[in-house]
Amino acid sequence: MIVAVGCDHAGYSLKRDLMELLDELGIAYEDFGSYDTAPSDYPDVAKEVGLAVAKGDFDRGILVCGTGIGTAIAANKIKGIRAAPCQDTFSARMSREHNNANVLCLGARVVGRGLARDIVQMWLATDFSEAERHQRRLEKIAALERSRPRKPKEGKSAT
Ligand code: RB5
Image (cartoon, rainbow, N blue to C red; front, side, top):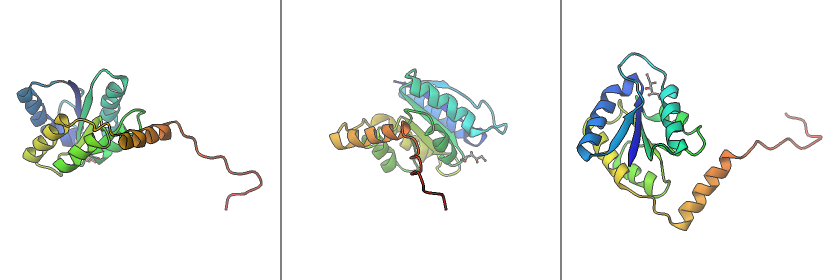
């Protein structure tokens, strides 16, 4: 497995801790930045990590920002990305078993180092269940990526 990791300034310190964890676990990764605590815009790194995962060059992505929310919103705009902001190990496990999440988003201002390490370990160790019902639901999510807003019916004016 190879993991794409990234952060903004708020997530920099926790991302470094998590790269240490990946080293301990012997899991390969590439760091997509940020490389220091200078203010940066989380959509930029979410884009790089998300595209790398969506393209298939990386099996999973891990993004760290202040809350885990901004990076998740941004990464989920990319076709094929299922980014899950997780603050506990149960959600991390479910995001893999039920949602086949391919990007984990963590909030460095929300979870401490110890919990973040547990979340990452749980998330990396858990496989998608592949149950038919979960597969069907993921296919419906993928269909949303191809959907277009309905055209208003002729003769009906917007109110
Ligand atoms: C940066 O201050 C913060 O807004 C960002 O790290 C993230 O939490 C956004 O969702």
